[in-house]
Image (cartoon, rainbow, N blue to C red; front, side):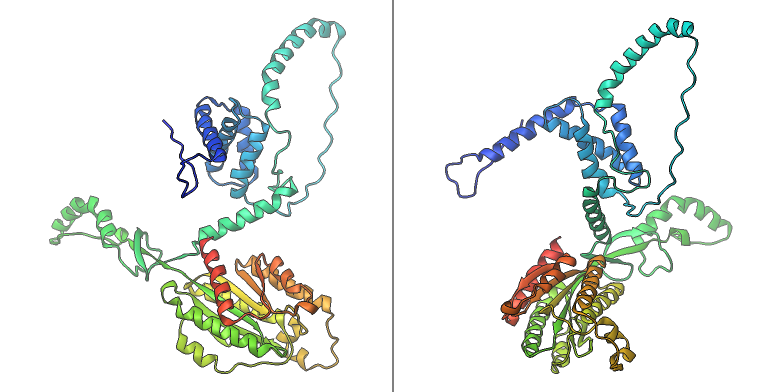
Length: 460
């Protein structure tokens, strides 16, 4: 028996919301219809072929795909699965599990089919014509229903590419989310630090021995080993061999790394640096329980520098941030690329789960990445200066690398609204990040905005 409860909190009348009531009744009816929904063998073959073309491993994709197709038919009150159900099931189940081949190899054109065989004698054709027509009619009547309920084309082509370009972006996003989930960004697994969660076979020297699992593995062989030990005059209570060894799989909470990339060029550079310093110290003061780390990278002159490397120490941050360099050019591309390098190095250390780059800038740049990384280019006065469009393309390329590296970008735009170019918003769009226009933001506002974005990143 099903019971539907609905209504807004504080609604003393206890009335039911019509929308929720309709959805509840629809779900109840679908559960009853689901018992009678059928899916044909040809439809199952179509789902299996889509899973094979998509490169799905195992059989879970086609099993759940068939279930979803039947559920969709049940929601519509039908007893048979149709074409739309199959396509939607592939989109919801198989595409997220697929391995997309964005550049499939172009195969040579297939040779044309051979010509049909010459017709037989008219006498034999007339004699067999009636029988063939009867058989074809029977076969057509049996196959018409199945053929009508199977899509004419596959969503995946033979090379594993997407036939429908509209679903390619959805598949790429699902593949990226699947990669993130596999790495368990909020938890770090190791064999030496953390909480003991389960035993595992050691991949090398055992750092932390799982005594319970080791004894369970050795228990079935105690009688046989004791008999062998008596023959050798050995007297032990428990016999454990190297093959019985089990290591502890440990897990600990993963902290996040917040990298402040601050524009230290121009007349307002000192204000931006002071605000970034205050926001970093506020985050560090609350990082004891969350294990978050903070880094600050100001960029000015010809290059960016790591003023505060990733750290959880407030004392170290205060000491490092006593000197706030300001003035000079604006190498924004080098500042963002340095942040990516610092984030990747911190991720390899095993103490950082998620990485967020907070760029406090007006989006303007006048120093190329080549000049920042090549000492000879910075001293060569005859080298041609890059155009504004070349600098923008360079910055957008680095922003795309931030997205591909799995990092999150938060852009705090400090540009004057009257002379705004809107390029800071474009940087956030390319990096699939967040954008805030805060030209006169204080350190408290920047800290609150960063904590809000960081909380949303951890819960995703």
